[in-house]
Length: 561
Image: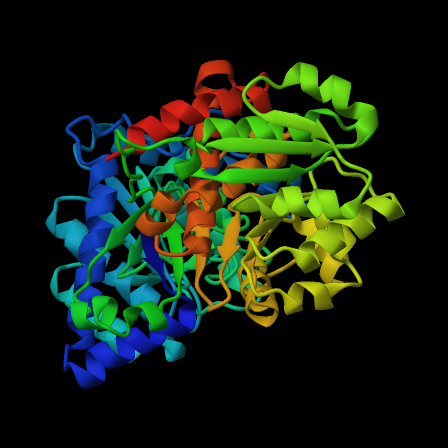
């Protein structure tokens, strides 16, 4: 259903196996990685008109800060640098080839950059490659690539962060290559590396920065910015994408993600042990939903029971029910408190609202007759309501989706969740998850937190937010790739809860998408895709959850097979 994602540790092991067990020379892997980087650079700058993609220029005076009282000396230095900037700009204007600056660290990621510099030289680019950091820490493979660069007529220069000539040259480049750090970085960037990151970030057109494997400064497993990070226009990652490309700030800093096959054997990536080895996927829409059979009826597509709504919260139950209907549920029964029933009844046409009976047994009987239940949207936190939600969760033997106040009711009663035999799906945002678990905010590693909770409590956890994560009890997880800021409005989560419950109730979808967690992940993806369609029609500011729900049918229609 998605693209396999690998952590930093998993990638390290993959590379080790490819080199030690399959006897693939490490320099061959590095060469293929560098070809991918060079190809990405060339796609940005490979043109006849050398002026179109210039990052910087010599427009305006060069400001120079020089210590000491000698203002005349500072003035002369400023004039010298301005003359140099003008000369470089003139040279660049006359040049018929792209200029590319490559900033390399002393590790194998830097080796990828050195090799890419050599390849780009062979493609006709004007190249300068700089080593950031200690030459004594260069890996053997990077040293080998430096020798090849020298043989081709190039050089790996020392990066001097206070050298204005270097900075001025880099400012003239059509593209900068970020090869400072790979996926192993786990501490904040500092020293010369911080200068180099800022060198790339100070350019006005960051779209022309190409990062090797992951933008330097982004944690490969969490997407966290480690003090400072490169904001890439394109990131070329090797073999498999990493969680940090999708999660947290990493999703913004990665830019366009391109995945490069560098020759790791398919057996390691797609063999019989691959699913167990790589339990995380990025959902990118490589799935379809089955067409309906002509001789079917509404009972074949699921009966839903929704417990939702309270005084002041009459919209949430309607939105959840509408999303359930729009996503294919056969029958949607919406139980709401008697005092808001007249309001909800007016708003519903396809769903069937009813006032909640006084007797718990009657409510339980109604829910028992359905294929799946949703508890929580707009439910409120009155003690009587929370008791009802917990009782249903404990007594029902059908799949249950807990959303909003259904999740809040569970706080302090996690034993009820642990005791359930049927499928339970929780759909918290980070704040609700923190209240439920006691986790501190912000949650640094959302992926690991979601997977751990789902495994410990034998449930499906849908941790909502930018790049919603769906985690299964067996350790598998899916990172969503759809959605937009226009969905950050009250009611979007209610629509998602209704869509997930609808999918869980439809047996033909269950057969097509294997098991409940995959159904939930597919619902999350299609919910975001519908939101993207709504944003295209109405814009992120003006779109509403109702617009999103109205787009669900079009989104599903495109996926029918």
